[in-house]
Image 1 (tube, rainbow, N blue to C red):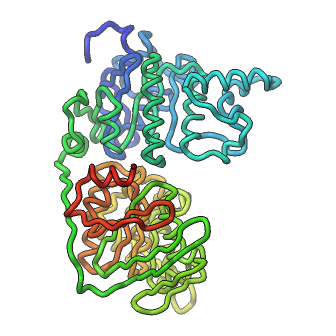
Image 2: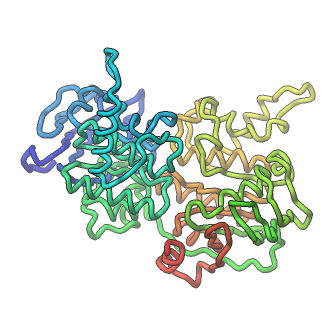
Image 3: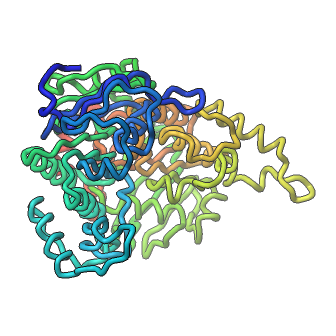
Length: 501
């Protein structure tokens, strides 16, 4: 711990420990955030970041803590109510907003709830909500339903709600995970403005480049232990990744030429009104084809047509040389297509079901006996195979899928689709919400699958992902394929300039 005057700090923790059963989530961790500082809390999924935040906000009580201090005031025991009264707020990745309420109602929500019923002063609510947005330099229709807004504006609403509660310390959990580069830049500008106004921000993100851009210092936690506190000036992404994981993660171009490999999938002149047009592409066996571009370029919509989730208006597709026009997703799966959705929580997994059930859900027909019932021996064997094959870290197969980290959940999604023995695997933003170490593990699996001959379409708006994990890169903009790139003949800055221009 530093010895600076206490009034310079928004938060000071000293030797905080918290365990769940036999798992030590935090082990004598120190953590300090200066008033007005943008501070990054970094570490792999499951390292203790969320537990630390929940200790500060009173959700969890530590077993031991030599000091918990907020804004210069020592606090013996924190409750969520006390934390909020003192000026602590958390914006979780899911934002915890109300989609069917208006912008103003979401911003002023905490003012409208309490132990006693009270009338809602709409005029005052509108005025105060507008004042908070003006402080952020943002204009927004306060009467608009939240679910009409894009995710970037919902982030702003969540920040405004925190400021409505006079927050002086805001934790932001993966705030840019679903944003485009331009939206991310605008959000980071808001964060800088808050910092200049004296609000301390704890930034939690797996995007290391923006961490180094926005934060002054970074605290690294690994396996519940404090690794250290480091200035971001002079820090590299490679060094930060090494501190987080304990081993060096190196990015290198792995592109290969596969001119003699058979074409697995081909699209010619594919179009869907209002989404994309004149899309032509080929994917060969063993190839990883990267598809990048800004969010809204039509990448996911193209994947949905390839999977039979939507129909093309014109053009045609071939799968292994035969005409391919799936009328629904079951038809696509039966013909050898697999799709890892960008929305893992809603579309990729059944959150209330077990790890085992999620793993086998796509191949239940292969597990039934002559009586039509599921063979639990076959199911257990299949689950055991994929858990071992993909290196999924679990407690027990019967545990809920929600007990796993983001990286391990994504491996279960992969297992679910690989169990169908696909010919083409579509990966749509496969590392959203996944930490740097787990990302490396996922892409090792992707490369191994390609080496075994599986054709892979990798969709990502992160340039480094397609650059270092693809054999070819297609750039999609405004619903069209505008350019093809060879990762061996272009640099990351050059590709970023062309995509974000």
